[in-house]
Image (tube, rainbow, N blue to C red; front, side):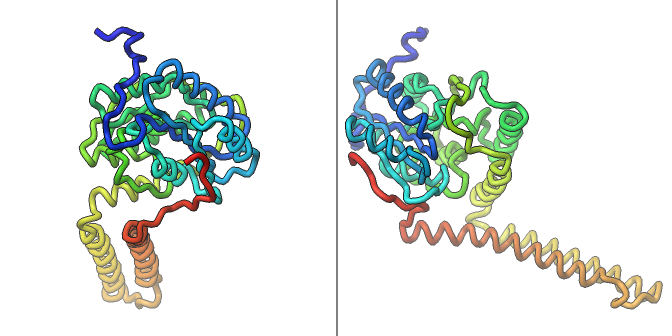
Length: 334
């Protein structure tokens, strides 16, 4: 039986085509008070528990407006373990992660938040879990240190909704501490707020997914970038993910369903209007029912279908031209 000490043993060094064994990717935005102490803790963990691995730490500065870029630049100049990707503007956490994945050279990729609520001391544990044969290890925040009504309750509801819709059942999609084998991320392209759905994309590829309880700390510096608006964005992204999963190769099912519903409602409205005309003598122009049904449902159907078409079109445009959803201003130590 594996002992508690054995659980912290590092994974075996890589013998693959990748240049390094481990890449730690950390997207940050306006975290000037957190980046330096977080990097120090990560270095301690790498030296004490993962010294046999060739590793790199990549901070992706997502267009911060405070001193985050300046501080990262100073650290990178004195310590070449740190790699910095500075985005030209704030593109969002998903785009920042994609930039980090694009520059990562490790066989294993570990993602952390930049606010120090994730504990770097859990990195050896998630890597050891990967070494058991899993492709993705997703953290579960034990004793989560966030406000219940504004953060924890919406997260619980979102986790249940995402699990039910996607069929990939995880207890904490919102936990940023995750570990991946590079093969899982090779063909992943993310948009919107879809970084939390990476385990879903991985599951579609047949990946083995494990969950692991990890530590969670209260934020001690800086301000949270999460708000209730994110719930709305995640819900819309979930609709897109579901559509792509189930109907990307057969969109006529969606188009046809909306078409049948719209035509059926229109016929029903017209039949009711004709019934009133023949039975009650009510002229068609005396009731707004025909016009109301035609306008509202036509606009609704057109808007929804145009939205879905736009999603497919945007992905085709990005993938066919190998375009990215972020703009890099500069990189350091690459």
